[in-house]
Image (spheres, rainbow, N blue to C red):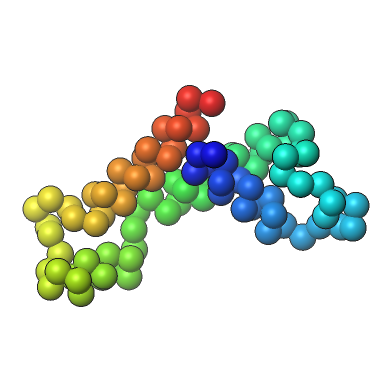
Length: 91
């Protein structure tokens, strides 16, 4: 399961359900509906692509400085999210 699929499933499972729909597992969701959740997942991952200063702070705490030459955690984080989004493009 790629990251977009993982996030789509989490969004599906987090939505409030009525009694009938609560019994429908992700595996049973129709592909058309899954596509809608994948679109939401891609939007969520894209929104997270630019890390906040709070997300980058652990680098400075751990290493005592932030690497402004190589990008440090920021670059790696963005590359990981880009890779997650590229997996979706292949589907």
